[in-house]
Image 1 (tube, rainbow, N blue to C red):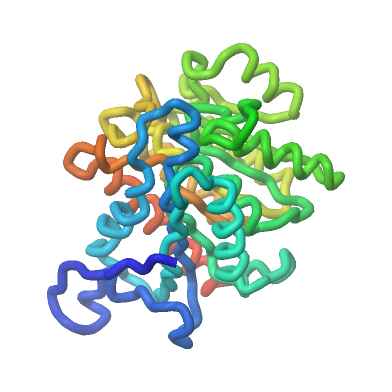
Image 2: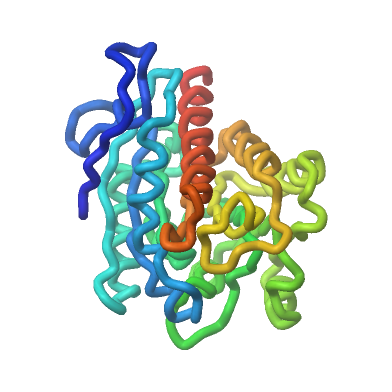
Length: 315
């Protein structure tokens, strides 16, 4: 696992000056973790999907954007470093990411999800999602909520950034488990009729980007999804956001879902008490402008981690 050297702005000592870099601990430090970070330095899936590569540098850029964010609550985040995909060996990278996520969760069963740290994977292309799935395992009652302009349900000879949820569906169905999959932010112009047909055949639910411009319908959609599952894995592809907000992705959105709507959806997921895992994917620093995409990714991660920690302490 490749480590990251955390540093950031310092205005003084003590809790009144606390920033994110100051709440990060190394594995084995003995400090109970509220959240556990794992990076997935991969853009092999994007390359295979004929996208614009560069997302392998995403984990470091997200950490750099997180580092100086103010933290107003007691918080401990353990950083497990990066799983680095070697050359074209995406399959090996997936296996190692799964192992890293499982280790970071400390083997907590579903019934004890509040005893495990919230695992947060920093992508990497959206091929990250399959590694997240391997780390979570075949958990009954688990739903997947994807904030994304694309279904990522492609059929291909080998895994890509466009296939992860098709792979997850196949494995869950083979194990006799439901594939409960919902996507918010789908762009009709970015998904062929064949992909809509696949989503229908798999029983997926979706809300188009046209219908996700306001908080109320988006949160209502997510509420219906949450009501039908015991746990939820939240995955955010940053291309769900408008291109002006998130230019640093392989496929910038022509419309996108406003960031306040995405933030409100994340709040609803956390407040449900059902969140077990988060990943944030597709940041390509080569394509970013003034770190806009990295900053919005960091804000969403910061929001989810701190809100989830506060929820657990008040439970």
